[in-house]
Structures are given as structure tokens and as C-alpha cells.
Length: 279
Image (tube, rainbow, N blue to C red; front, top):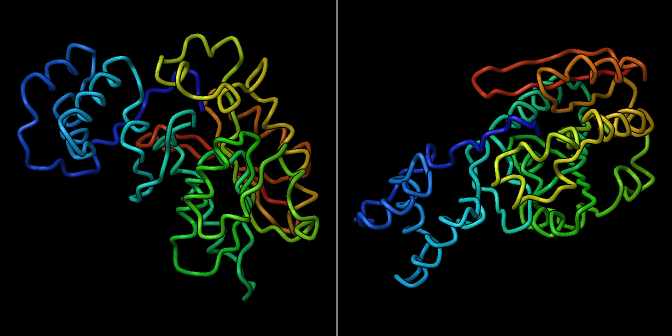
């Protein structure tokens, strides 16, 4: 994710319940700086089982806890993906990675199921979206953070295919040379820029999901160097990056033999680089 990130609004994709949330709740949220106070209040009412629970949720939201952590879900590609305290919340911009992975998988000629690896998976929102598509996808997901791995296992059909460890290291060795697509939203915020991020990200999401090293590309480069050993001939790598960093991501891929393509979607405010190995 990027240092100038602003949390997308999950309120836009859910019809709020027809309830009177009360002027006090809306007023407290608005006073705390919540731009969509009425919609947030309606969602918190929907999530609360009692007035006391609602009061607790509102108090935590006013203190700065991300709305998605309080609700227990985030809308991603039209699906509710489970999230909770201590995990990175998938952004709408990352839906661009799903779109690119779908495009590349749709071009496959092989009759067998597609093998997809979601690297730096977080809660595995990308994998969950691809698994919901028609067609057979054999998904494997990896993250270094045990908290994220626990949530990812809730979001995918085969929890035992979610591994904890450093990049490709924990994957089954027999996947080498068989993967059709590796998709990765690796951290890409430069270390010094983390202090400039909004408090919801900086204070409530794990640094390991944000910190991309001195130039923001250190984790990306490690993924790019290792990916060719796991991809099949003609396989693809899809990485989220920022518009400013895209050329650096593409250059790192080209150095490993990938044919690269930079993709930008202004509506999503998303940027991705795709790489294809020689067939």
C-alpha cells in the first residue's frame, strides 16, 4: 500500500438498515472527524447486539479504531471479507490485482485447474475473490504475520493451504515450476513515510504489512527474484505498487526476465505491474 493512502469507504457498498441511529451517535462520530457519520452510525447499529455494545463500538470508533475492525468485515470485490484487530484492511485499489489475475487466468489454454499463489496475503482477500469465480482455482496463500494467517484461513475454502512464513519458503516444494499466477500486495511504503500515514493505518495495522524498506521496494524485489523458480514457463506475476514506484517495480521484473506491463486505474486509484515469463 502507499504512504498517501486514504481508507476507502465500505459504507458505499452496503445499504444501511432503516433504523433511527440517534442524533447523539451521529454527532459523536461527526465530531470525531468521520466524514460519513450517518452511514457509519447505521453500520455500527447493525453490528451491535445491544445498546451497551453500540455504545462501546461508538466509543472505540471515536478513539480511532478502524470501522472495518469494529464491523468484523470489509467489502472487497462485492464480498464481505473477514477482518479484525491487528490486521491490514484490504483497500479498494487492490481490486485491480484481482482484475489483472482474472484476465491472465482467462487466457490460459490448459484444461487443468489454475494454480495461484497469493503472496503477502494478509487476510487473503484477493484469493477469496478468485475462489468465488467460476472455474477451478487451486489457491495457496502465504503471510509472515500469524495474526493475518489466522484471519486468512477464515476467508478461503481450504485453510490448510494458507501458510505462515517468509515469502515462498513455506510453500510445498512440489509447486515449483507449476504456478500459473503469483499475485502480491507486498508492503511498499518507504520506512520514513510510515509516520505520515493516517492514524487508522499507522496505529492499528501491523508495520510488517506497511513497511517496504528504505525505498518501499525491498519486499517487492525479493518476491520478484524468487517468483521465477515457482512459476511455470509463461507464468505471470502481478504486484500492486504506487504510480510513482511503478517504473522501479517494472525494472526489477525486467531484470529477472519478465515482460512487463504497467496498469493504472484512476477510478480505483490503483496501480499494478504485471510480468510474464517466456513461454
